[in-house]
Amino acid sequence: MIPCQRHLFDIPDDVIYLNCGYMSPLMKPALEAGTIGLARKQHPWELTPDQFFTGSEEFRAVASRFLDCPADCVAIVPAASYGVATAARNLTARKGQSILVLAEQFPSHYYPWHRIAQESGAQLKVVAWPDDGDWTSAVLSDLSDDVAIAALPHVQWTSGGQLDLVRIGEACRRIGAALVLDLTQSLGALPFSVREVQPDFAVAANYKWLMGPYTTGLLYGAPKWHGGRPLEENWIARANASDFASLILYTENYAEGARRFDMGERSNFALLPAATRAMRQVLEWGVAQISETTGALNCQLAEAAAELGFLALPEKFRAPHYLGLRSSAGIPSGLPEALARQKVFVSVRGSTVRVTPHVYNSPADIERLISCLWQMAGR
Ligand SMILES: Cc1ncc(COP(=O)(O)O)c(C=O)c1O
Image (tube, rainbow, N blue to C red; front, side, top):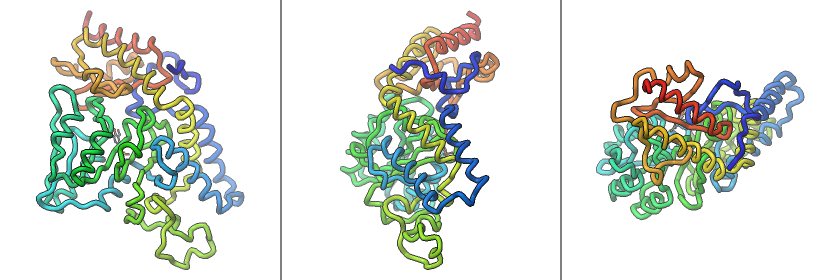
């Protein structure tokens, strides 16, 4: 268990922030790294061409440790949607085939597949919300031979249900389906390995569980896609990019590995150092340890919330860091706003109250949320 790390964040004493699934607070060391990076723009004459590459390569190397892959397989993207669009550009589905998504899947990982289905005549097949809370079994039973692309997360974002991606990856390979993952609600908080899962592509926005700033996501591209087609044709993703004087000697060749999928202006001198510093801190805490620490807080809450009629998925089917609470009476309208007035911050997504703590939280924070819920229930 990780001792409370609140001192590394600028969270006032009276604020109970249980909303990392919305956006993590930026930790002080990351803000410092970003501030130094932003200030570089004051003196552009001091920037050397190699600095357009060193920061990006450092980001790639650190990001690759969350994925358990070589840095060569990581591209720098601005958003999960950009990564999913890159995958969608390279994959095909045809009439008679289907693309598998989950019920209530996040829009950035739904709309691109919806469009491909519309344009190709393929069917969008939606895995129904499982009554027993077992999303893995629900996916496995829908992974039939017709599935050309399985577009899935590690954690279903409205329920907190965790998918067993190793088993799902195996099933995809058996039927020859491509696997595209959105790890935005899990990478950094749930151990993951591309070696075990073997996806084609996997994307994660950085500003939640990787704790970086907005607009600094990452895309894993499996080696077999390293000859794929990027979304943009930007200069820095080409093989000759480091020779600034010769950029107009146009080349057909791209930079190595997944770098061809990098977004334009990926060498962001302010955001990348902040993102890299935050990821380093997350690695120092340890992903498995973060999972265990946040999981203990969520277990404490799930038990107490059950007495108020709020139910979570069974522990064996849910992601430890991500608690979705539902009530048969429905979520009282204005609940998050009423909690926010008491400086307790959670989200409502679909018909679920989502509670997503991190290492700046303590059992006392959970107790405060529970006592607010009791108060609101008039008990
Ligand atoms: C599951 C999931 N994917 C992706 C995102 C962010 O998507 P994008 O980076 O396209 O804005 C979110 C944000 O809440 C999310 O919950």
